[in-house]
Image 1 (cartoon, chains in turn purple, blue, yellow, cyan):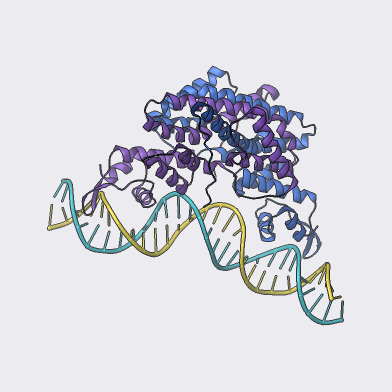
Image 2 (image 1 turned 180 degrees about the horizontal axis):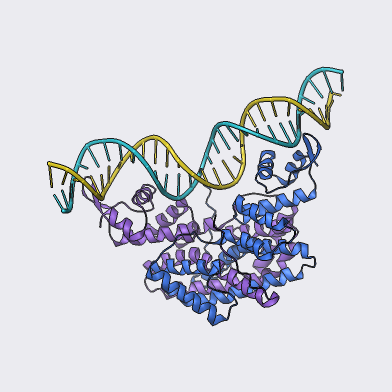
Length: 217
Length: 217
DNA sequence: GATAGCGGATAGTGCTGCTATCCGTTTTTC
DNA sequence: GAAAAACGGATAGCAGCACTATCCGCTATC
């Protein structure tokens, strides 16, 4: 397959494919002449993965490059791949040093120990959680912690479902990719489901349907 | 309060505050002279909200402008505010017209009817969900639909918790804002919790702790 | 042998979220 | 009451991102 066909099959323009190769997202095609190359199914699949992580997962090109590099490494350390994939899910690195932040960190520490979670406050996700809670506190929505355990229950359920899916994958080769897809696209999936459930729940409560059109900017 | 103090209190630089005013995110200060203005607590709070939606919620400046404009409208139509807030959560508007998309739409329609959700396929969230499922299908992870109901259960639980929190707000004034904060920051909160739960679940299963440091690029 | 497509390289684009600079005025400080 | 700082308002510039356009000399194809 030459680059034009790859472009047609995936819907990604030829210059964009070249760009991905330059950025290390996509391995270059195999050269048959000094200036001719062929691409295989692996390239097609990888392009689909790139577009999914980019369009649906909302990842940045450099983040995707990190994930794919970790994915291609022979001795893939799972936590490295996952870490690269999770980086984009975190909040910005804005540091606050106020009372809200301290209180939020305490709440997170309590949550972790209360639920017996085998993790530590040094986990980036814990820091992100603190940031969210601190921001809520600053906005006068500190009472949101009252539903924290409901959220945690739901998160545990989703995590169990993710593991169940990954565990079902027989080949270890596919497993790492399954984890990445599950983590990144699963996030988008839950987000959409949450909005649907939200509409449903408020329809039941208030009798409105909450339908609307997508903004067409 | 003059702009310098507002800047010091919120940690937002003076030029950035001016920029937010220009973009309509923040109302201008009250003029005391042709070129002097004062700001009140409302400005301080609004700035905190802007920073939270921007840094933690990952919203764009124009999206925040839409949300805040809807929030300031006298006869706030809740679904309009929510819609503006939800726009940023959607996936890109990339249209595919393949078999995967059709199958995904069917799965979504089935899910909605099976769960008796009071919504319709025309809901943007339903379209987003279809896009996610279609992308998974294209990647050979179509089997992920097997955990769709676990996700939906969790989403329902989170939606119920959100409504419970919002319902607790006595003043209707604060309610709309509570919905926005709950929707946008709640998303970030769940994301962090999911990652924590993920680490915990895989630690229980595989005995690893999955700890890692945040990339410092 | 013409024409289309190719690989590789470099430069440019549109958008986003600020940041820098300037102006003339006002407030503060000494 | 003079110097310095801060201010409001306007315009211009910047860095990062995800491409996109153009050009080159070469190659596959009709």
